Image 1 (cartoon, rainbow, N blue to C red):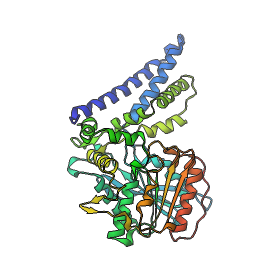
Image 2 (spheres, one colour; image 1 turned 45 degrees about the horizontal axis):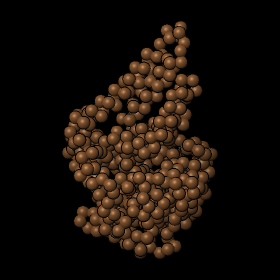
Image 3 (cartoon, rainbow, N blue to C red; image 1 turned 30 degrees about the vertical axis):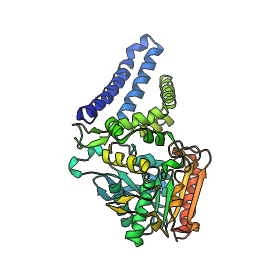
Image 4 (cartoon, helix red, strand yellow; image 1 turned 180 degrees about the horizontal axis):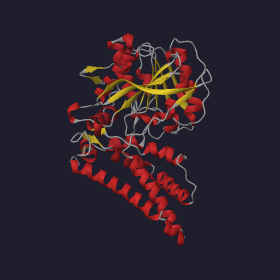
Length: 422
């Protein structure tokens, strides 16, 4: 599977499906078919539109789409995205609110590197902007990074986070969503020992696999069943000739997407069937729920092979974070060294990716942290997506997180702005 031809074959199949959708849409939309009206032509055109859009989205990085926000002065303020650090495998970006004074709350949102772009947190960012200055880790697509840039594994990822936190200063409040939770915990512990004055004020871990063995899911079961050799053989490929990263070993985004969809095949099949029927009846729209969700869900990025394999081997199989044995550049990172960073965990009761128990394990590892600096929240009825971007996040979790920050960050308590759904 490591040949470049297999990577290019996947891209060829994607491109062919996009072309077939475009062809079906164009052919079924000829006005002449109006002379012999038949529902087949409407269905064919609808299938073509949905298929073309879906396969086209797979190789396009979504836009953040956050143009402005309302502020306390009653005005809408424009948003400017500025890059503070741009490294080969990721950047630190700042959502600068033009014309607004610096906010007492400063938040670093650590986005997952697990198949989707950081824009997956678009609604999370939009919900935080009225109440805080927001910074985000914007990871780059591995297929666009030349082989000359070198490797990028979980140790490199951790050191990126250390650099980002050090730049932002000790008054930053860190929120890590899903995959980066264990590595963000490790980065905080790294700073606690190496550079205590650069530690963040607070650390909120949302739905992350700190201890994957605490509660089994389909994801953890798969990691247990498959050997590292089998995994490398099945999913690792070399980037094809079309991209700057030609020859780089990656876990391709298209293959990751196939895995995501297979986990809920019935749900996705129904969603696309319903969308095609709506389009054929003329009831579809550009910004309906289906398009908003799948434009983001289908946009996938490649992961470096070493990052993916080291994550599985060291976080899921080796349990290095869960057992406090994680090392960076040969030196053990002791999570017990965290003594003054307030830590909060958030879990969803119905999370089938990082089940309840996996994330809250972080509090057990923080042996040097006083109990009054530890907090946890289990959101009833919430799945994985809902705890950081859905109604559970907007209505319940977000206010709790902001109040936790205010209670532990040493800043004046600010008003939590009510937000509407995005």
